[in-house]
Length: 163
Image 1 (cartoon, rainbow, N blue to C red):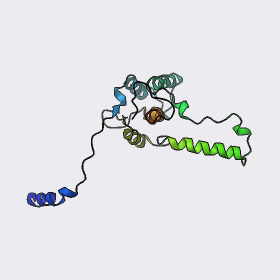
Image 2: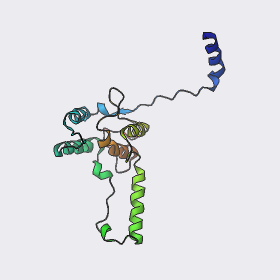
Image 3: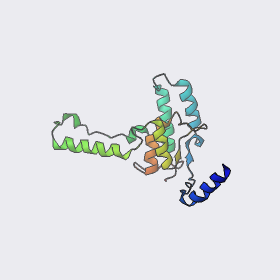
Image 4: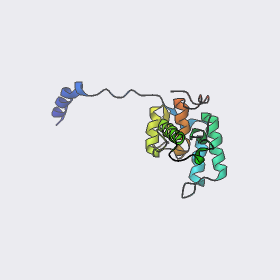
């Protein structure tokens, strides 16, 4: 058996793809404030994953300190007259196109936590916990992290390096 394996290895060694080069990722859990948020999410999140107003403020504060933006900064801002526009008007269609284009900028926008972790890993950010599972706060910070890493809104805060 060992001999066959050795022969197989010798025959296929040239065809094996090179192992992926290890990339250095910024581990989010090591940044100030994220471990505390993870503990609080474990203790204080409701069964429906709702956050208390105090927790929402804490998340926004940490997001601002780390990424320079909060989640609402990554959402499309509709013009005040949007609801007054006729559904078939060219201006409303133009705005709807802008909404679609804006949503396409954020790969993590509608991604699950597992998918968001993979997307963010490609941008150099590690949103895994110590067991290799997505952080509980992934959904709360993924858009801001993506925007900061891609430079979509403004320059990232000193804690997060552009990738």
